[in-house]
Amino acid sequence: MTGRSEFAFGGRLCLDLTWTVRYRAIAPTELLVDAGDVRRWLMAVGLPAPERPAGEDLAAVRALREAIHAAAVARIDGRRLSAANRDLVNRRAAAPSPFPVLGTGHRRHLSAPAGQEVAAALSAVARDAIDLLATAGDGRLRRCSGPLCSLLFHDGSRPGTRRWCDTARCGNKVNTTTYRQRRRERD
Image 1 (cartoon, rainbow, N blue to C red):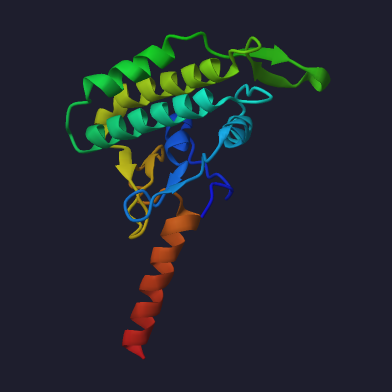
Image 2: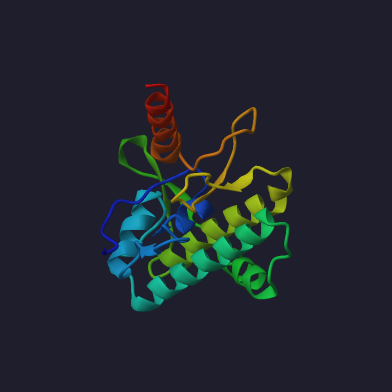
């Protein structure tokens, strides 16, 4: 499968980036196949995107994604973050971040100086990761409980009991399967 399938979003910018690898635990599927996919993803999340991202932009985005994923999994599992992952996230966060611009029709969008769009976008993603990882001790950073899913999510619900990356994705599948199984057993 190519990376051309649609991106999915769970509400936290840094975790949304980790969602660009699907089925990580069973059959990893890369959604950022080429530099054009980097542009598509950046535009989808509302970050500045260069007209033509370069190969090194793809490598930089993937490297940050993997560092965030590894750090989040370590945090979920109660392990220490590796120095290499922490340093990469901190280095990316240190770059100037995107700035708001008032466009036509009184619409706000994020921008960055030409040639610095990817660095600025990665700064925003890394800053979100720092915010999340620094507060993840609250137990709300989790792995999806879906049997074939390994996506990470942050439970921002009031009760803090969410089990799925997305109720419509994994929650509905599990609930439907459970319902059908109970019905078969009853019949």
